[in-house]
Length: 173
Length: 350
Image (cartoon, rainbow over all chains, first blue to last red; front, side):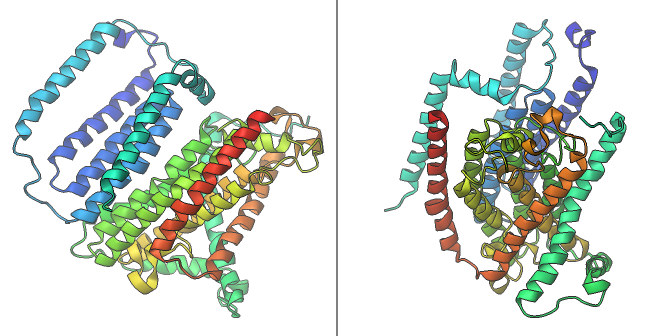
């Protein structure tokens, strides 16, 4: 814990981190506790926007913008689009909860515990150097088109296969 | 090198940027509405348009805003009140966030974002959420249908827009809008640097696709399926009245202005004049008066581009929903992919 109060820690950045994190946690709880599907989707927008804000705090501009583009601009729009095409009731609904929702709590706790343990065990005592500025996009592309080329191509291939698979599944004729 | 500017403290710069941002959103919106929506449309229809308020009706805008502000703020009984109130604000805020990356001069920028182009395209897609929830929360079938049509259309036209910009990014070798401006104004056409090298020359196809996609993103005729008044009353805006409608209205024309700013930065050389005219070699050597001249140049280019957008709007009938989708997926996207391939090959070859 002492690392958190070290002298070379950027205080403003940390304060910002905890404020955004608190907002994200509140949003995350509201996603599962709200009684309206569209409201849940909008709370999810807030949480995903919070992730983008955290990336900006960590000086990862490009990742932050990608987060906005992919999750808010595409995934959430499709979510809302799908919800509104199928069930667009206004006001609170019953029966949104799965019968086994209680099982989720220990799973979530276990997952969070494992992640915290792994991160603290590995990086607990090290302070990450604060970056001089945002990472230039060209540096990022150099990394994933050199060292990361094979995984990058593999991922592209998987995505392409998924897209074609979705078309094949959805086509009726 | 001429230095006439005074040193501005940090708080002063921040204040200037905020005021500049508000001006950069509201000023184009007002000018577009008066010059094009009131006057140009009237002249094209052989009438005078508003003539009573002020000389040539130039104060009509204030009369309209005053009218909307004093109207009752009606919220339908079954509407989801909080979200209904939030939706127009999401749309307007996304416009303000969009103008943040546009450079207006060597130092007259709001934020010099290294992934500026990407940011603009990402934020441009946020307004869809506002439109969708506006349609949903109104508790009205016409509104919901309008919202769904808007979402389908904006998703379809966002892709060609993103892909059309990639050609420019490849040519400039940067996603920073300031770098793109510099690349266009320091360039030369076969050694002749009289007009710099605006990317519209080599990326004309990209420019065309971008402007068509902008037309669709703004839901201007012929892409106004989401607010088609003869079918859906007024689409997702049906239930809105008073100042909430005003916010949607300002958002629509302000976004038109901001997209025109972005198009002029990407394709028409942005705020710059060809640097060779004044013997500048790089961004650092640009004289300070460009911080005043730049915004004026941008404003001129914005007026020309929005003029074209409005001209198309007043001239063409509406597309049918299936024609609109087919046009995006079967014509614009393949064309823009081909544009990227050709640009990349030429870039590597030269």
